[in-house]
Amino acid sequence: MIINNTDIKGVVEVIRSPIEDERGFFERVYCEDFFLSFTSGKKIKQINHSFSKKSGAVRGMHLQIGPSIETKIISCIKGNVIDIALDLRKNSKTFLQWTSLKLSPEKYNSFVLPEGVAHGFQCLTTNCEMIYLHTSNYDPSNDIGININDPLINIQLPLEISEISERDMAFKFLDKDYTGVNI
Image: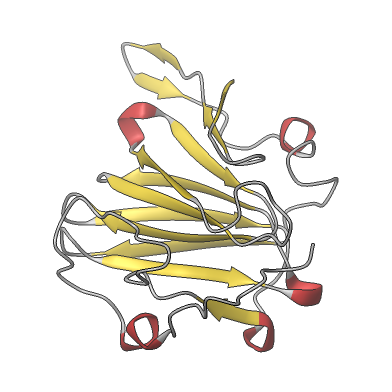
C-alpha cells in the first residue's frame, strides 16, 4: 500500500495494490496491522455502506465527538466521488481547513480521517457506493454536523448540489468564536 499525505496532518490517502490477472483482480482492502498506526491503536468497530443515486448528491459534513470520537477509513466501491475532510481539532495548525480527494474503484484508494476531522462527499457520477470503517460505534448523542455551505469554511464543490438531506442542510453555520473539538 502507498501512503500519500495531505496538507492536513493525519489525513492521508492510501492506495491499495491489487493483484491482477485475466480473471480480474484481488486486493487487500483492510489490514489491521497496517491501519493500527492510523487509528491510534483502536480497532475497527463498525462498517457502514452507503448508496447515493444522483450525480451531485451530497452527504455530510459529519463527525462524532466525546467518547464516540473516531477515525474513519473511507472507500468508494462504485462510481466516483469527491471526498472531503474538514479539520475541527482544537489547536490544530490546520484548524477549519479542508482538503478533498477523488475516490473511485479504479484508483484503488481510501481516505483516512483521524479523530476530530469531519467527513462529507459529493457524487460525481450516478449510483455511488461507499464503504466506511469506524473505530467507534455510532452514537446519536455524540453525532454533530457542519453545514457544507458554511461560508467560514468555504468548501468548493465541483458540482451543483442535486440532493442533500434535510438533516445535513439544517446543520448550523459555525460561530466565528468556534474553538474546535477536543482530542
